[in-house]
Image (cartoon, rainbow, N blue to C red; front, side, top):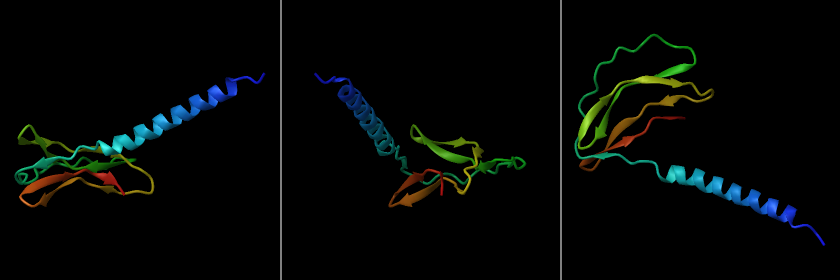
Length: 105
């Protein structure tokens, strides 16, 4: 009589792979879309720190938080070799404003 052990192991491995794939695709599906009903205030003037090896400066920005804009100061992003940092920004869509998240390109 053949053992069921290899079949059970294969079934567990396939189940785990499908769960991981579903989780990864669901993460991008749940990216938060931020819409504000009015334009953000002008950016604040920030003192950019001296360059730091292995990092790029991500400028401060206005965040939409509970019905109002709140300033979020700049911070360092670890460099991804072969990519450049595209800062986040607000873009107008009709009468509303949408936040486009910063990303590596």
